[in-house]
Image 1 (cartoon, rainbow, N blue to C red):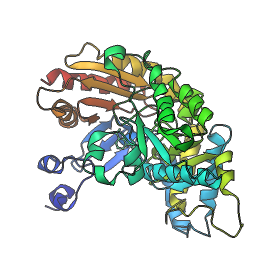
Image 2 (cartoon, helix red, strand yellow):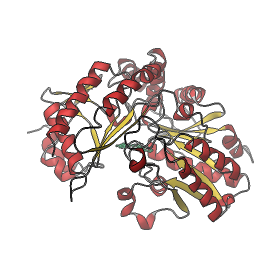
Image 3 (spheres, rainbow, N blue to C red):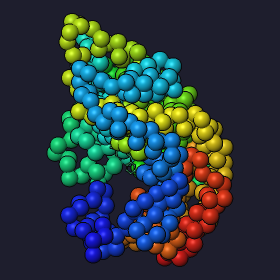
Image 4 (cartoon, helix red, strand yellow):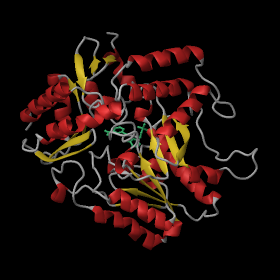
Length: 440
Ligand code: PXG
């Protein structure tokens, strides 16, 4: 046997139950449009757009062509002191799509790197302005900001932090999360209750004195924790409090940016402009790893001081602004524009919401949440084995129904393609229903 599955032992898979997986591997070897395929020719419908990454579908011909051309023309060039034309073009393009006043772009290779970069920029910004005492960082319970030390520390997903607790960076506090199933179960879109939770930030300002806080980082809609949209007015209130205390507001838009919420950025959808936006995923449609940190003029200008021959921020990656990734990014932006992808995503929202909420009366389902094209169906955990019901649903979807869905414990998450067809959404949710019906 020389198939990929027989060699699995060497591969330590990320965020996966390795032994369980290797006993029954699910190996993808091809993709086209909205389907994955396996070596034996099975086609599987992807209900998660990759991992929130591939909004316009897999192997989009325009992006494939751009990558093929670029890799043959300029495969790599130094990212420090010299740069490449594609990185310049992409930074310009993406900042033009960003909210007014967010005009500068620092490239990374992933969401985790974007978050750690943003946190470092926040600290550097205050120091450059003579406020080096502002070192505290504020995250939120249930937040996911990647797995590097900074992002893990401001993040609020317990298992991701648990065994690393001694190494979490000091000086971090967390706002309470806004998931309130008791009051908000089965909300369509933004949940009614919970705006008062934004006042947690005032409490932390009172505790530490706001003048010691550097930045607050939140996902506009929490993704990994199982799609938790904010109560109306919550993000606005965070913005206000940050302004009152001179604190930078960071939106982690690794999932929210590039159409998932029907706009280039979640900031625009919510009408709240942060000082810094972190992105990745949809920046290249997932085709080549790339992330970006977008910052306001005020933040950028604070660094552009001192001797002009000096580096302003001692930070960067060998692959920052990689030309092949940047070419994929540019082609992705073309597809977003030329195919009216964000408009299409907006037009699908109602149908997606209706399909999700049709699960409200399904057995075991205790909540359904959605906003934009982010959706979740939460099931009650099985007595004594939390996560078992969700894991079983994921596997049954794959093996019995040939659909790929993601579960976080007992919450099924959905990230439909931004250019989904209504009938494929209906068929795939009908398959999910059959699976949930069959699960005890
Ligand atoms: N911030 C946010 C908001 C994310 O969603 C990251 C940072 C880290 O990105 P990288 O590229 O370093 O993985 C993410 C990643 C899920 C799921 O099930 C979500 C992510 C990754 C894996 C699974 O929702 N988001």
